[in-house]
Image 1 (cartoon, rainbow, N blue to C red):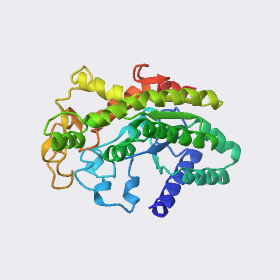
Image 2 (cartoon, one colour; image 1 turned 60 degrees about the vertical axis):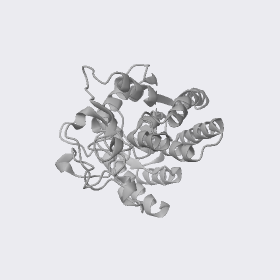
Image 3 (cartoon, helix red, strand yellow; image 1 turned 135 degrees about the vertical axis):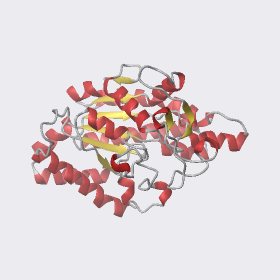
Length: 330
């Protein structure tokens, strides 16, 4: 898998360098808040990288019904009916292109070397220190751990250490501004509601996963504060995804949104729309803006938009020590 992924990631990021260096913009675009946005993470922020991996169809999203609300209803590889949080944060920072990145940090090292060769070490360092690096990961680790649980504290400590290692490695390569998205209440997604139903015969969220997600945030918060003191010039926005999703669960109707379905997937079939996959044969809800979940594991574009807007200019309840708008202006 790594051999197939590396060339694509490198090529995609080389395209980014060309766009930034040449100023290849639309006519009279708004000024960008940052020169570039780099994304590390899992399927919740993947804008199509999975299309180029040697994986089964279940691990890709480049077929209907995915992308039903995208331009020309095209499946793009996003696990969404339309755009995802990475896309929408990119728009809010006025950076139209969001470039997906492999979680293997050594690929990014190659990208930095390429950027330096194409311009100079000084220009590359300047671009990287002003750019934003989004990290949204950990959900898959929790899914895997919950299947064969052990010592929860040891697992969570290791996960926090992995975040610290990734951020430190990126910092050493020139990154200075980070958006870190914590883990949402995973036990409440449709696939995990189905898991509870199968295991216990009762409905509701799968509590063991929610407990892990809830315990993870304060540990991540403490690590980020310590790291910001250790690494000169580092700044960050830490988004509390657990708090954001919980707020929507508790407030499904506001002036800004109306959700009528908080448990089942819009695309899929069976209990919670999670027993059968979201593919070209799956039924799709008509009122997608009123659904929290698009498929068994991922949010709708509407939810992604709420998350992106909250991270961009939300208050300290959901994002701290600064929001993304403030981070970009530092």
